[in-house]
Length: 251
Figure (cartoon, rainbow, N blue to C red):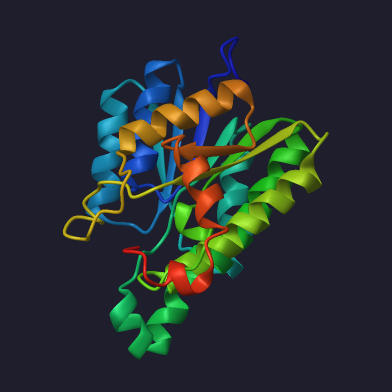
């Protein structure tokens, strides 16, 4: 169960090597999170992440999880929940893709869409049902500001995140009153190893800043979190820019 400050005692991360997720885990461990499950494809990076969190004092387990294998999600994630209640699930896996390449390769484009949307729908529903069965917990889903409006530079990724964002909002409505808290997080450009070398879209942010916003959102039981917060106003304006003008913006 969460402590008096809203800190989850147990955390399941889907996308166990995500820099944002690991920054969040570090922050929550410092606030008394004691058990962490890292779900992801088996790799040295996943094992290093687990060893790092163990070094911070958390009992940390790894579990083999593939977003592109939805038929396995119920079995794999069911085993995690069978070990004990999970206070928070952080759905953090995703695939940026390469817009120019993926436009020429529909198979690659579909992989981006399936990872970011259909894989997340499957895992999200499995975790939501488990959280509802235990009667408490938070499901935190990493969306993106790219979900807010299609941009020429990343519309394949953005369209998948738009689907995920809408799904998460609807799931939150469906679970309202059940004791399960659903929160969607919309970061802007995040400086990570994955985005290194890509043009930054200001205002950029960091994994640590996103982690701080997630923790604050948990305490407030927010439904939507923008990182940085100013993006809420920026996107409110951009949503109403006429398309002929929007196409000419350096986005």
